[in-house]
Amino acid sequence: MTNKQFGFTRGRSTIDAGVELVQHIFGAWEDSRDAIGVFCDLSKAFDCVRHETLIGKLRHYGVTDRALDLLKSYLSNRVQRVDVNVRNKELEFVNSRVFLGITLDDRLQWGPHISKLAKRLSSAAYAVKKMRNLSDVETARLVYFGCFHSLMSYGILLWGNAADTQKIFVLQKEAGRSRNLQVRTSYVP
Image 1 (cartoon, rainbow, N blue to C red):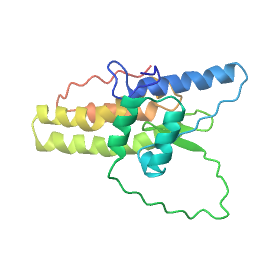
Image 2: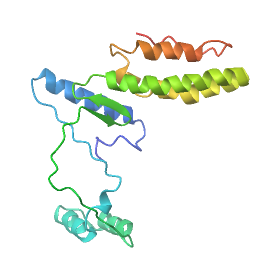
Image 3: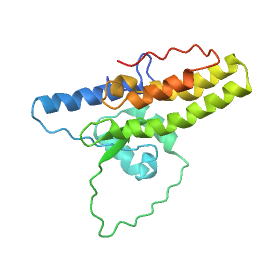
């Protein structure tokens, strides 16, 4: 298995993939090299190529019997439909891109991510506040950790030291306050 496999691997996560991406980009910048990211959604990749062509190419590049048999089994009895309508289209420059749920802009600034996250956390904080008034403390804590904290903490290793995180941590304090939820809200650097 490649050392670039992050999903479905013990001890590795999507955050590790994000950290490696950021380190690669910063390393390039520090060495005055260009950094380019190409993001491909391969969830439907096998629907976009003739299966016989794929098998032939894999055989040509050295994939052997057992692996080919497994792939043939996966691809058999499937149908595909290709719909193409791209006349006179130019490539578009993208100012930001979502990678593993984290929004990166073209200058690796975290502002777009933090703005989107703040909107989602505001809704989650509202749900926590409502739950505090409608239920016991333990249920409100479950809602806090399930709806608010899980969103806030995802990727914090990457964006947590950004300049404009204060609004995130203010929302965290608001969501964790009152009726003795007793949640730790001291993550501000």
